Amino acid sequence: MSFWKRVSVCASVLAVSCLSSATAVAADAATFPTKPVTIIVTFPPGGGTDLLARLIGGELQKVWGQTVIVDNRTGASGNIGARAVAESPADGYTLLMVNSSFAVNPGVFRNLPFDPKADFAPAVNVAFVPSVIVVSAESQYKTLPEMMAAAKPGAGGVSFGSCGNGTPQHLAGEMLNVQGKIAMQHIPYRGCGPALTDVLGKQVPVAIVTASSAMPYVKAGKLRALAVTSKGRSPFLPDVPTVAENNMAGYELDQWHGLLAPSKTPKAVVDKINADVAKIVARPDINEKLLGLVYAPTSSTPAEFSKIVSDDIDRFTKLTQQIGLKVD
Image 1 (tube, rainbow, N blue to C red):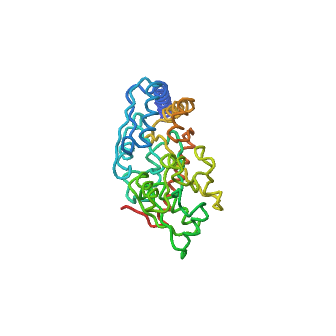
Image 2 (cartoon, rainbow, N blue to C red):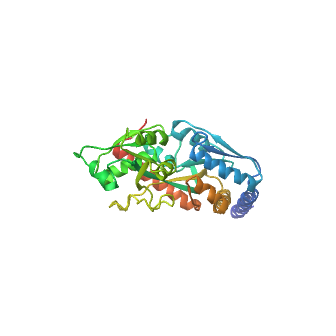
Image 3 (tube, rainbow, N blue to C red):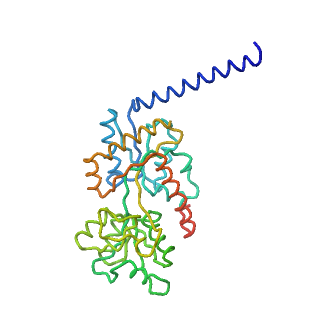
């Protein structure tokens, strides 16, 4: 057999092999899943991200006809659970439910055991939760500009409590410091609840917490909401202005929640997860449940969610380096 004939035969065999592989992936996506799926959550049971994973997982179980297990892998600010998914087979059977803290960690932890961009395939963004800047109902600060004026260097100083070091709420305050040229002192708490307790008790003048944790107190008149951190006004607090509306153009921090798969998971499988979750989130009954948990339901294409995650990793890394925040 001549050299060129052998090349032609090899090319034909390779083409058939590639076609067979593509057909197998398509078939796998069409029948996915054929066994139980695990959603790893990097937060403890009972928290907002865990509740969201259990709600979506329960509905996927009905759609897929397969068990969907929610596995809480806490520790190291979520890095233990994230690493477990990064090292899992790239077949869609192990997923990661995370929020914006996932995008903060690369700037805080200098030696992550995984690459947050290269090792994951974002599948779908499920919901947004804005943060809110609150003071006690008796506070002297009636508006965000009043509070920021008191926080300017040399003006006496203002401290703010957050849900913890490196949380999106912490970074929301640091973004306010940088963009507003003010100098609020950060007081980290072990969660949004303790921060709320101290602002209610007037132990700290300002707190930046999730809207879901603060809203009951705002509605009851025990807290005053000065601003929300999202790009637009929150449907849960429609009368509360955004930070951007207070001469802070471009300020935006929405805490997203979504599902990631290991990188190299077949695109067809990622697309199927995306489509099935999007259909669930679009249902009126699920919308009602999400709104009841103070989540703003959404859905995105994998490409759209990938951009959200990547952009947040870049901007949070720049901010954490600017303020010198690091863990290791």
